Length: 500
Image (cartoon, rainbow, N blue to C red):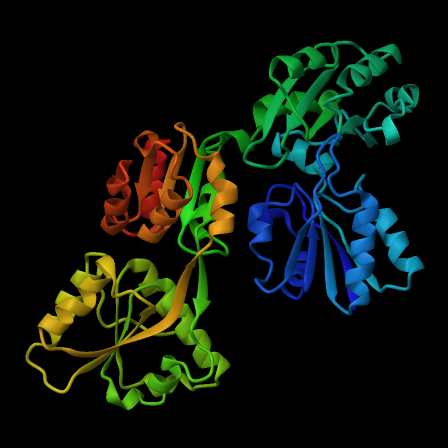
């Protein structure tokens, strides 16, 4: 039994501490805030209970009292609980109150600091909150009063200190903040900035003077969450705003993926500044329980001469099973390995194995034709094909059809099953509009989105597809289709850059 108050930082897993990531991996229950990045939530183990306790400005659907009750209830059940808080738990995050609650009730706890928007926001806008030439101190102030009480800010002391002023939760109070600073003697032309969605790929930065900033914020419809910075250091932003210079900053794309969990494509796009909304269309269920077909076939590996993979998932589940069952990898020494797709080949390489055959084309028919050519003058060869259940339906039938027609012996071994993630797709599919670009990484993702959003005119959607099989599914739904030159992450990114 333990509770960890973990600061999730801002924007995503890049600003999450290693300690925070470790605690997530062992969590039984995670209570998370609104501003926690989707890529961090994807790190939570599938078996862990996830509870959304997020709060919006002026809207607290889960009151703090209920959060407190849940913390105590889950901890007393003997569970490992992570309270995942945006930014830092103790920087206006009510983490101090939660710590007091836990201590008073004898619950062991740990506090993991996080990167606060008070620091991350200015940093991502090229604003150093301290600088030896113009700011020897930084003052972080909440601009959100308790229970709608008037702000109680000592502007005279803040202005007199002469450092950088950072006001959090300051959108609704921006007139009072700037007016208070000027009334306390600050030069009306002092540099100032307001940063919306700090350190995320939706970040917007607006610069001005302390007298002009309120009007600038209103003219640009700046909304919470936002941080206000006042001080000479704001003058650095125009020259050093590195974050907004990323190639896809401010661009948006929806990625409909064939499985849940972390996405390398999403990670790469976020690094380039793109706003990514992920739709995990399918859940992957390993078929590796007691008495499974994989167990039986691994026990009879001597009957095979080739091991064939058609996906990264299949490779991962196969080798995870071997590790779990403590099967020596040297039992595969007599087998040749075939696969389709560069990503699948790379996953095989991670296990210290080099594929013996991978076709230039990224589809099952090409894989089958290549294997037929390799085996046509050899007798006694038999293949073990480790792939998804029901993969022999639809386009997946090409692999086994071509092999069967050529008289090649094989066993089609299901190592995982794809289940439609209807709840998740339904939640996110409302973000699709005629202005969206959707990147599809599998044909099953196309079908899942189309089923959940049957009311949408898909002729207005531009679909970026990882291969011809996926493109065929998108075209059949009437989408405008662009296909990656190769079935790789790099090629998908190149195609997305061309279309954004």
